[in-house]
Image 1 (cartoon, rainbow, N blue to C red):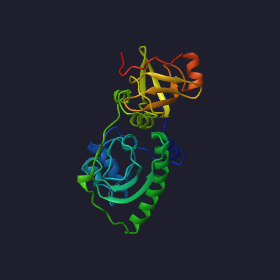
Image 2 (cartoon, rainbow, N blue to C red):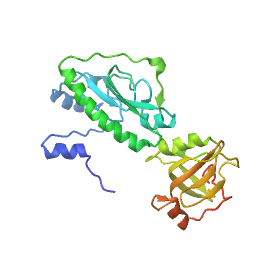
Image 3 (cartoon, one colour):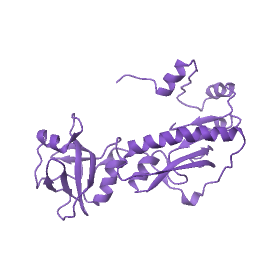
Image 4 (cartoon, rainbow, N blue to C red):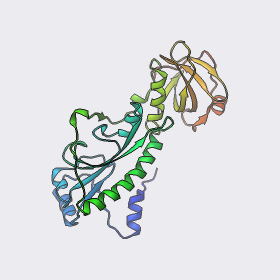
Length: 272
């Protein structure tokens, strides 16, 4: 619970590079500080705020954004998670020239990345971070030599990656098992898919699609050392790793030792 500098700031401090951390870029004083740097280009990654037009025009070559999707698909705050939730087979990194819109600027480079059946938001984030780091270096080199050819986005193909919230990660067992499996992967490590059992919230960290069966959604159909099989609106979901409040994520064999579940028990669809 201690405020800790990011790895970027730590490295900058170690090398004597000044670090500015304004809470907003709208003030004239902050904009003046940026102008005094006389930067050729500014690079933005996971900043979370839209840069004012005044800031976008400060660097000689503008501002570049490392965006975690293949634009124009998944503009917005949570492109990695939305791609998994939608069942996309592929995502990637787009290096884009920033404008005043939300991820609407011209595209400079695209680097695709497949989404595997076991990828969650964390593993996919890490893959894209590596791709983005390599991609922005290449983009800057080509930008410096004037070998960049901007491409307009097709706005008709754009979709919005809305910010995540905890409530949407509450499992609705009436949904299809295939969609709930994607939700568990897409919401990890935040906000984490969760369900309720007798008023207790349980986080679901890993699962796979189970055997075909029909029962009331949320009903536990099987419990063994490897999995807890739960009926869904269509199909079943086999839970592998769960976490109770105040506890650690545990595989099923350990979880049921401290939180007994049996066939016929039922997970709720909403918190009480």
